[in-house]
Image 1 (cartoon, helix red, strand yellow):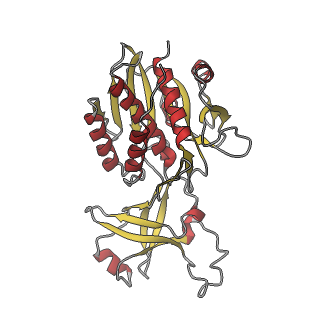
Image 2 (tube, rainbow, N blue to C red):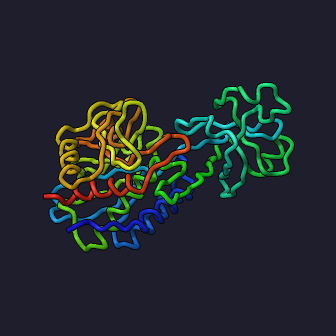
Image 3 (cartoon, rainbow, N blue to C red):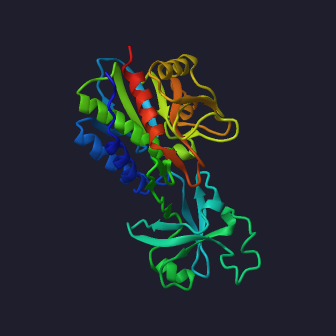
Length: 346
């Protein structure tokens, strides 16, 4: 029987979670939203002390448990300090490419729950004023936030309730093109999260079960390296869904599911990876097999955390990672097909 995917659910879920700001350390709102989705479809949802979400799907045989880690935390920034002229100095969260942030709209989320808007700019933002406006290097030290409030000094900003440590999120600019491309910031890894939630939706819609118990692990600290460093004790193996890399000598395109055989943490499990490759061939799933030399995943974090598991990693191809990212609905659907096959194929 051919697997029928619910494209409307996948894209709607992706757009919803993309538009909920969640820089690393500020993920409560998006986790709460995902909890509502899991509850709607009748699946058990719990949180660990770190704030990671866990969706449990009962299997035909629950003596074995497969973890599917994804992450909803994204790049972003924090208020580092407030300059005398009322602009805000930022501290990066994750590996931002600052040249792509110049001119982007953002939000400042205060500890009291208020939200203020602003724009991230170079500290030399005007060609008619600053001689280095065009060629000034875009680095963290050379960037600022211009606040959309009538303020003239750091005292004015402080009186609004903005302070050091407030989170800064960037407008994702989510779009779906007529040709099926999905353009947005933070497809890393909300595209993978939407794929995992689509797997959940399939088991509900088809009223069927995976071969073994499944736990979808929704990580909130992946971008800083320790998202799934601790996982539930009953998990035997992890098959992560994160973005696939594109460029240089990599074979992946935005329409592929990428199977990562090795990243900066070393090789992934040989048998899991071989099985994933063979399933793609068996089910005619468009895929690529690649090595990511400057990449780490929640599976990597789990292995470094001392968990006794085997690990694999897949994901839809994502162009321009950590910048203005783009994938394709085909890449997401091929990822969903592969993970579903891995969880059900005998």
